[in-house]
Image (cartoon, rainbow, N blue to C red; front, side):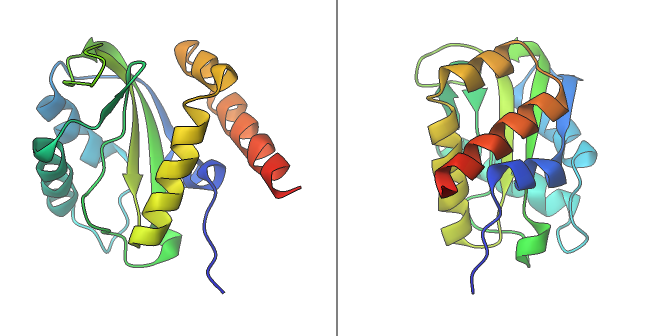
Length: 159
């Protein structure tokens, strides 16, 4: 049976980071790969190169000050290694987002398969349309508040 991790579970694995340093996309990526819990099967250099290459194709800025950096192809070897890291930037950065607004919130996605990557993207897209979630991001809500909100919402989907 295929078990997909929910966004709440992925954030539990990846973490939530506040006042994240960096003034350019490249600077942020350099620090990012050293701070997030990269599994042993993925080298920091491979992750850095993969997210830089994906960003070079087209901005991952989706609007509302949010960007979704991710490798173009799955990097995690096992589903247990998948994670999403939520990063609140100290300084908003020009991410070349579709709405031209600076980005101050990142959700780094690291998946083990195209299918789980698409499920995670779909979940993030849903949450990014929810006013309550956007407000939690804007308020820089505590990690527990964010993850509890996501997990509670995901439980409601199942019922």
